[in-house]
Image 1 (cartoon, rainbow, N blue to C red):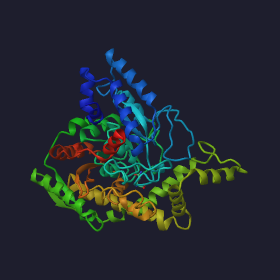
Image 2 (cartoon, helix red, strand yellow):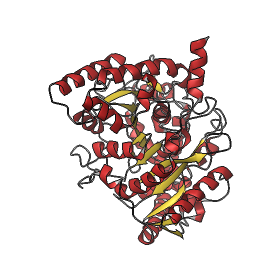
Image 3 (cartoon, helix red, strand yellow):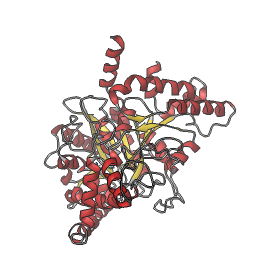
Image 4 (cartoon, rainbow, N blue to C red):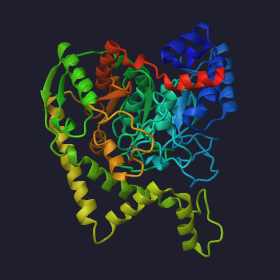
Length: 498
Ligand code: GLN
């Protein structure tokens, strides 16, 4: 069935391409047709370039016909968060600040996708400069959750998660500074991996908070996430923070079940946790125990301070990183400014949205001379305590099991006027970024309203293989990743029949 095509796994697509039952062109055409049909109600993309995708697909088919396929994945489109530079394509960061800027080069992760023959596809929606948890802070439009169009897809990689969940891309690349891959993956019922800090190059990726940012994959299955992570990971001369470590065969490692010791931190099961979410996550722990894993209660006493430490750290770093958007070097420049300082002020006032301004003001404040010690410096001390908690815990257990988010997808408009409520959406994800650890979110059931729930596993540094293996074992035994969101299709069907 043609409409099933975009829901096939990377391996199934690769098999079809290899045995000739599928061409890259047919796949690209199916994705474009589906995108045109569903996108008006979904809003997962900021823009897309159908001609570029078709051209790439034709070239891929030619390569394959002449026996020069770059890998078995050659010809498979991968959606790209509009924060990652793709040569010749617009880069907006979900902001009006960059105007009509077009990337003059590929980010390293894009070069690596291309080297394997994957086709970068579309510019996926996000909260402006990746600051947000619902995609409502995009300067363009909000993205709808494919499971319930009146709800948010999570954020900031909400466009990426919604596109994958709705079958508009077999996989996507996002970024995760405090949860922006895992939380939208959880809210959209797909799988998302934040690799270890240093595992993946950030060259060509707009910096938000440099000590926290990581690029990672979103896809429907753990296997697909493993394939994409192995493709983009590894040391890069253009990014001094990328680790000089060999990348293991993550797809092979993702098949190795072992009887792990798994830690459960009570700090992640407190007030505000939706009862359906708690039930599903505890059921996942019980499953691992039945399968021979040891479950232990561990303590992460400083984790509850994670949200405060994260917002002090991330806003301080963003204040410095976003200084380059000054109306002179890139993008939007205010007309009618009187001198250079006036250009900076007016261009930034016009170009940035409210949430970005809120963060820049907070960042300037926490770094200001009178308050630096009280806020920024103290936050760094507590960050060390959070990291030590994790080190101690991960010396006793192989990984840590928690909910990804305290609630399932919330209604559009429910939190966007209340920054604090929005910030608390990331309470379970931010501390792993502060500690630099890898973490994955996999679907673990539906709540009473039929909305997906995410299970988070947090691992040791560079322990992606084990993490993927555990998530995969859970996923294959349950099949929650095979459930499909009905809302977006029903809407399209109604429209088509009217
Ligand atoms: N939602 C968090 C924030 O608002 C994390 C964002 C991210 O990971 N990019 O900062």
